[in-house]
Image (spheres, rainbow, N blue to C red):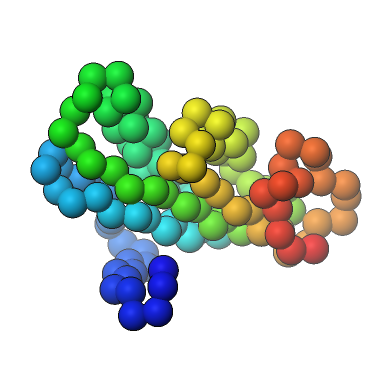
Amino acid sequence: CTLDSEVALRVGGDFFFDPQPGDSPVNLVLIAGGVGINPLFSILLHIADLHGYQEGKGNRHKLGTAKLYYSAKNTNELLFKKNILGLMKAFPGKITCCFHVTQQHSQICKELQPHITGK
């Protein structure tokens, strides 16, 4: 976001992302902690499906980018981390993620290091 950008926030409850063909593209920022990743991971999978469909068949969906910020105590508690890294590789620049760990005491694997912030 830039200064004076319009931002919509939604916390808890039932929420979803279901863009329709012809909708203006939006850039999503998804923020999750711990097991709160579950619904947001579903949204990421949906975005990946739409990007894949868009590239393969030229559908009418106009998609922006999706950036996930995901925090947990340590890398062992980052659910779906390998799947998320796979989505980032499959759709570079379209799906990105920044993992944050708060109580990591062991070495972080090389695959995750570029995407990890925190202790």
